[in-house]
Image (cartoon, rainbow, N blue to C red):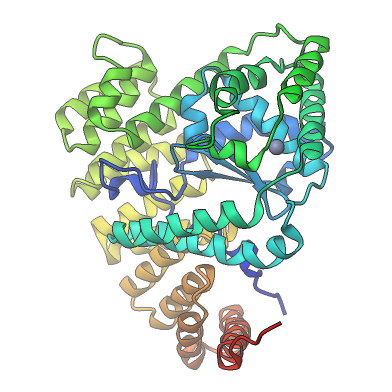
Length: 465
Ligand SMILES: [Zn+2]
């Protein structure tokens, strides 16, 4: 019997919504915190991180990267091998080398096996609920309840900050030195780490209010920056210049995040219409789309697509713009093209599947199901894809398989009660001795055990001591 994954692995971000997940529904004035799934940004952070992980002797496939939609500057490691990076860090960085420096430092924490200070307890027990409530929050936002989602997520974020991430000074110094050695091994400069410290963090050193969260997760003393500087100066790649691809990815990643998370006025202040560069047009296209100015959004995007017809993310954005403006049928061609240009990308597969179901219902269901089976095989914890799969199964009149997909969705979100009830219903009608039947039976077993355990804990109440 194949065991379903435990909560800490199961959460894997519910919603895989085209470009930036939570932002379509988030109030434009305030950025709700939550996990962001975005094929392009995830790819860029992977390209930045994987060589560092390899230099540290780690297997990139074992390390997950998560993007948190939060304007504050922070990055941290939780649950052993998960790197979390705030959008604020990416947006405030001045060079890609600053982001890469932080990733090198976080890799140093992973390679050094640094637990958080209070964390025997935290890493085992607190991580699951935190991650699950993050995923729930994202899903709530995706499901049209942005208020509920934002509350869930900001609660869980505070939980995260206070319960488990805080390294000791010795661990910080050790992660710095390890990070520098990975930068050195990959021919990169450590100067970004110092410039980020000096510009964003050091001014807060003697203040008590509004310190960046990075200072709380990564306490530092002045002498740490000095020893960093010694290490950076000793590096043989101190003055290395980043490659054109690294620079380009950085500019586009920032532009996309600004467009998705800042107001139109803020975006236009940073990327005025006189700026005809690719990143500037990209940021404006996103910002216009978010205020439903489709003509201007398409105007910018048409120029980008003419310049670079093979960029999958331009196609994706156009598909998203059309889809979210009630033109699902038109969006299909763009989502299909994005997937052709970046094959096997689960988030792009999900976009296409969703458009097919929305536009064509029963007629689109066959292809959508093929796509979603690939997505859920690659990302078993992608609750959003399970939800779409349930809908496609329903379109095809496959009620039991739809219930199984809904059971998977609930299980991925840690809603074991609902998972149990869907799985029980699916099990009643699925033909026995099929893999689907077995999977339903497994979920009944494991979700049922969770439900009973929780009931027992609540029934027992809290005892002193
Ligand atoms: Zn650190």
